[in-house]
Image (tube, rainbow, N blue to C red):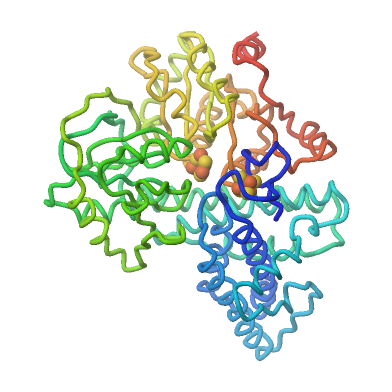
Length: 544
Ligand code: SF4
Ligand code: SF3
């Protein structure tokens, strides 16, 4: 196996025996094989569109199969076996339809003629032989750019799928995912072509995040500022982690009146701010922090646990029997809730487990500062800037991870001067979400915009500020200090690049799949910089 797609990759270069994430060699090579097979299907879907054959069922499947290969989603070889076979079946069926309509699928890409081995061991051998990443291109810079694009597409497919779950999709996004997956099989592309592909991925992802925003706010209302208790309430309990609002909504509905309190974990924290979710009395609070502490925190959780897509750590044996997966998440030997979303097994397990013996008061945090809320107080914010009470905005956003270098982000928020406002989003906020840093004229200095996909909301806020001050986003007193962990962060970065946003600081380390030459291209075009050794150093430079 070889995988270097996420920030925790072994030795900062690549996982080649077992993933630091817990991904086994067999799953790694099956993911490679699935990506390969998906590219074959995408090539046919692109040709189909030229013939007027548009199959959104296939398009959605391509997004799911691509999302399943994102870090910390699916670790179950049996599920990949099924994905690969279905991909090839869909490819053959669609190809027959395209040809019947007079189309010709002419690409010489191996993905188009791939035939899966009859059993799982055979598929694993095919996946290993493929050596997918190393064979993306012989030239290491082109390979690096193809990896940037591929990981961007994984993030894009993820947000597209999240939006589709809530009934929001757009044929242009599906078409772009297919085209971009297909393009990466070509060996005749140069640096400029691949940079253009990466920009296109970023651009399309803004639309995908907009669709997800419409799905979330259209179904559950606009987030409102909401204090969320961090402790616990005596009684039976279910904890929900991952990203999916719909799974949480359905679980809240199904647990009504059953005497079970529902807790969020990780990226589910912002869910407390949505009116149609917060209306449930038994939606109690937030337990624990972010995905990288999942094992430790869930070990102590006295109820059942629902893993929704994504970020999911390997369940320990100590609590494995209390874990249920749903959507794209899979672990061998862990119960999976099917598409009927009947959460009865989760509920029954929670009722059989002890729950919390007593109330635990651990304070509270504030969430719910999406675009609607922030723009609702835009006048106050603009006044604050004009009067000099607010000197600078920081977007300290992105993903948490296990490396010690991540203290930088905690330090940054704690050390930012009292006349600055910090917007945050995604799971990196758990490094500082409980810090009490006060307010400026009634506006909290730490504003939680939401999940990683709410980068869309942050972009809207930045654009509105730029408009109010009659300048470009790069001219605002706004600095972006981002942390990355996996491929959703990669695509958000591409989205920011596609908007022409400059001077982003990225940490805690730069991706292993970016070569020095490609880094130079990014520095020249976007003035991206690694974070400094200390937060103090960067604060001084930015505010000088
Ligand atoms: Fe390693 Fe990350 Fe790949 Fe897992 S996803 S195998 S940790 S690089
Ligand atoms: Fe990302 Fe897994 Fe932090 Fe949504 S998705 S935030 S890591």
